[in-house]
Image (cartoon, rainbow, N blue to C red; front, side, top):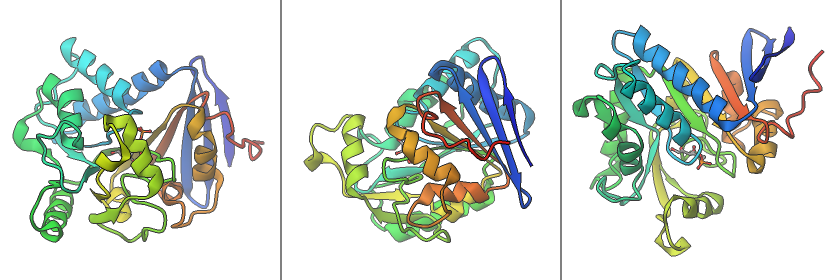
Length: 268
Ligand code: F6R
């Protein structure tokens, strides 16, 4: 069954087939999209006794984090019981490094809300033994199942740092970064490609799929064909983000530009 609603600020397409349900929301502007995501995160924080949130880094979620901070300042949300996980990290990078994903989360969110430091978990890219670091992280996630995992899509279709052809069964692991991901890192403060680490450490695809709810965010015309493939394409390891089609509780949130190539021809 397929239905299509038009709302004031967004269009909602809901697709159900074979028990799977994929919800896609298309917002008129990035700020309405950010508000929706911040509302979802804060509603979860208000509802769960021990909320566990999985955060993504990158440009896409920054506005949603800003809106979470604003809500906290207005005393609309209390993050003191939240446990947080980050999706990924550069291998070889200390958390103090300004380009680390940990530093990103600290400066874009954690430093501005009342989350308890001991409840913030992140992969240590500078660990001496990356195998045991990956094992440690996977176990932590198993003990603290993630209520909402935020995701973005990479220019090669990756989710977290799971590059094309990562097995869908993968758990937390080290990944050789593909060229597109290395290039995209220039958006994150690196001055040249030479400075960008060649490896990432990342939640695996199976790790991500364990989350109770996924919120996949995409903004901008650059992402539009990738978004269409993610949502309408074949689910295959060569395009990792396509796996979200098989999650039982996923919402894809897009601005108009990211949705501009979305094939809606399945809508009756
Ligand atoms: C970030 C991450 C990546 C990004 C993706 C999109 O933790 O895991 O998958 O979500 O590369 O990045 P932006 O938002 O910068 O386009």
